[in-house]
Amino acid sequence: MFSNIAFVTQQRGDAAAAEHAYGEALAHYRLAGDADQIAFSLCAVGRFTAERGAHPQAQRLLEEGIALLRARGSPYQLAYALYQLGFVTRARGDHEATVTGFAEVAAMCRDLGDPLGYAQSVEGMAPSLVALGFPARVVRLLAAADAIRRSLASPIPPSEAPTVEQALASAFETLGQDAFQAAWSAGSTLSPEQVVAEVLVAGTPASATGPHATDADRHASGAEPAPGFALTRREREILALLAQRYTDAEIAERLYVSRKTTSNHVANILSKLGAVNRREAAAVAARHALV
Image (cartoon, rainbow, N blue to C red; front, side, top):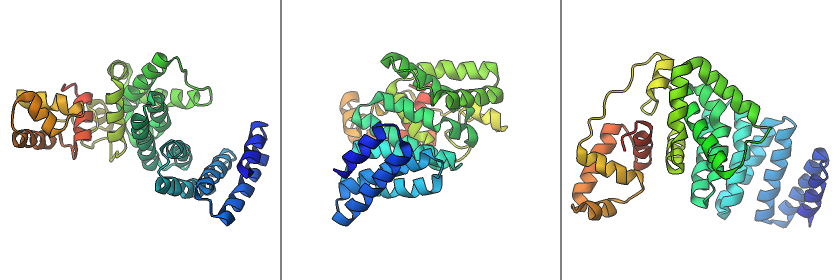
């Protein structure tokens, strides 16, 4: 009942009154011990608190709500709350937390079958990736996001367009026209699975000279390009299947080899690519056109 009253107030367009109403609902549900409604109300109050610029308070509210949603196993609500938190951490200048948060949202959208969520996650993290020194990655991922939106006939909202345009402008200034166009062309051909894989790698950005930076990113930071990976023909075959999320047992059956042999090949592939897991290996493969 209390949440319904708050929702009606929200629909009337009175943000201050809606925040107050959700705050009252939160107090009531805390007394009643209703964990589901507490989580919902925390995230609602956090969202309105963020809209008026009180970002530290909004972050505390959203993080408390997110902790409850994780415990309750509420994937849709959790993905939306993490999405809202990403804008808060971005506004506070915590770019690594922003990228990590939006990467988690992208992974959840993959599991929920929501391709538009991939695009929204990329757009949310783009300014932070620019700030962290990944201009080529920003262009490539935003090109992929643009392709997804075009396929769904879902244009970027006017409220987000200026931020994305600024991220692209900053990347263009850093990369120059040729590298920018090359990154955009590469990103436009990424499959949704490749987009998510690369976003997940972006979720742990150490620096523009880290193991998953592109050659253009390294050039922008003054670092040298990565050396060749020296994969054998068989390793490339296995990497292609690994990128399609085949298990070792499934790869072994498909290639008529033992599971132990497959596992040894996978270990060698991870080592050569500098990847800590299969997900990162798939992202590196997509970025460098290894498969």
